[in-house]
Image (cartoon, rainbow, N blue to C red; front, side, top):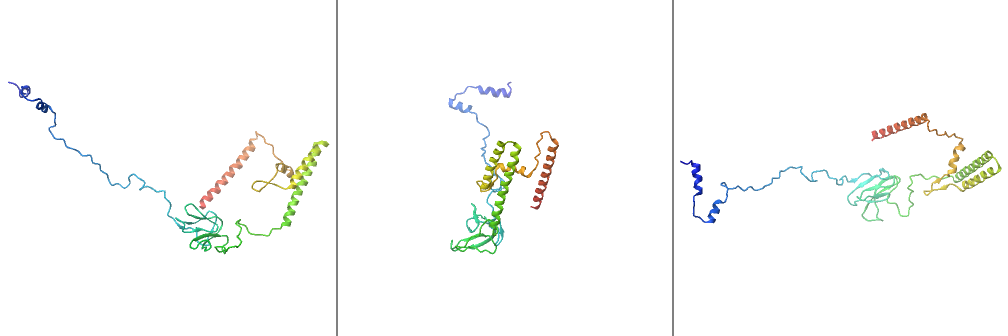
Length: 272
């Protein structure tokens, strides 16, 4: 008696009459359980702080607009007078306009809000007057005040010219005296003549007046700078390379100055 499993397997090999198509359909492998189709669905949770710039800090323009200085308030160059978007107010006397339409002072003085019908019918202007009692706009043809921050004073021309001449004469006398001393020290007539010739040339240059630089400031000649110590009879200490005691004293003075400078900076920060 055959076992049930063997008996079942033996039944598979029984000859049968069938077509090739039916045989192939029987050999086709198909799952006994039908497949369940799973749809791919994505879920987006409602979180506030996700990606993007909308939730971060923006680097936009500030909204603190409006007047920063009131009328008759004292300002210095660079102080902001009015912040605006567009030109609600226009720059007047001693006032500049920035690229973001900010009005700022260009001279020290007092803030004035005014209108100027001669320039425009409807525009409003902000200006800076040099004195508190001055009014804007200035009348046409009136002399303008100088913007040097100084007070007009009468200069005594005679005394100033006399002082300048005395100063140049003193310089010439000093040079002549030095020439005589140097001539006697060199010894001989040739050395004395050469010294006197050089001094005469220096005296002539001194009488011409000081040399002016490109910024119209006087420049002292190198020859005069070198002779200042001789005129003052001051002793110049020779430099000794191995003098560590002198180096230590200079270093101590430098450290002390740095400490004082730091203390001043700390006081300034504390006041702010």
